[in-house]
Length: 89
Image (cartoon, rainbow, N blue to C red; front, side, top):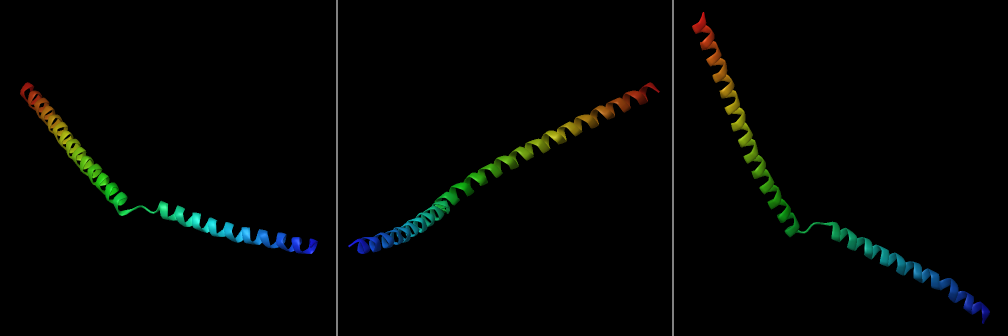
């Protein structure tokens, strides 16, 4: 009887290891599947990026307009100074 009990003990860990491997593989597959974004997630992300792009383009246009206005003011000041200096001479 002692021999028989010993045989059962050596087989039991082997079965446990194989079921552990299956569980680990299954868990890994679930994690991989969970990491993959869904179409809905990608669509939401794309829509958010489109909104960000539109805001950035609007901000760029505002900055370019402010830049142009600043250059026009500087040109006007330079012209005014030149005109004033020419009138004095």
